[in-house]
Amino acid sequence: MVSDGQASEGEYRILPELFEWAEAIVFSLAAVVLLFTFVFRIVGVDGQSMENTLFNGDRLVISRMSYTPKQGDVIVFPVSPSVETKPLIKRIIAVGGQTVNIDYKKGTVTVDGKVLSEPYIKEVMLSPVLPDPINFPLTVPKGKVFVMGDNRNNSLDGRSGEIGFVDTRDILGRVLFRIFPLNEIGALK
Image 1 (spheres, rainbow, N blue to C red):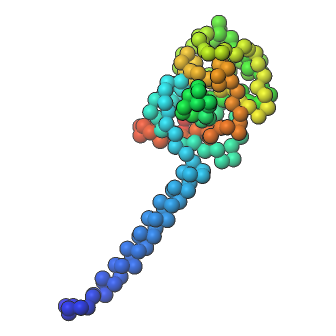
Image 2: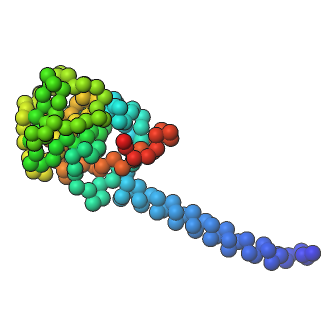
Image 3: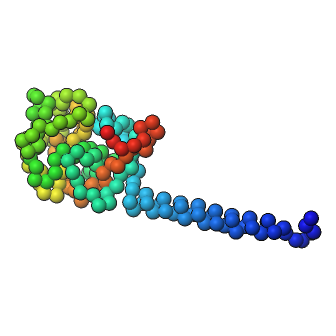
């Protein structure tokens, strides 16, 4: 039995353990904040231009760290506020030095003379009604990429002069994986 004014030995051991737990939690939270500030970023999908790969409301983790743009990557980039206030999410079709041609009658995209196999597109591409359409074929300048949405019939993308080529320095990051909705967590297919 402990007399008044004296603490038991067990009470003295609890305090250091609580401080250790608090220290571990604070350190963990700081590490997560630093990671998501400097290495990763979470972005949301707004719209249907990437269906059936990504859907409105999906949440994605992106990263720019040690990234070199490659054909087929899904990227996030800002555009002029006069065009869109939120960053856009599109697929890289061609990188600097490659030549792109689009045949709307056949619904095909050709890069350097080879028709792309695009199982990710939502439906056959029709001739779009885009603001300031770009004429094809065209060669992508060095340091730029040409992008298109997977839902070609509902996408404001590189086929429009409003978007055009994306400077690689403006790319916010490559999509690494989806974190929401929970039943779709994982790398993009």
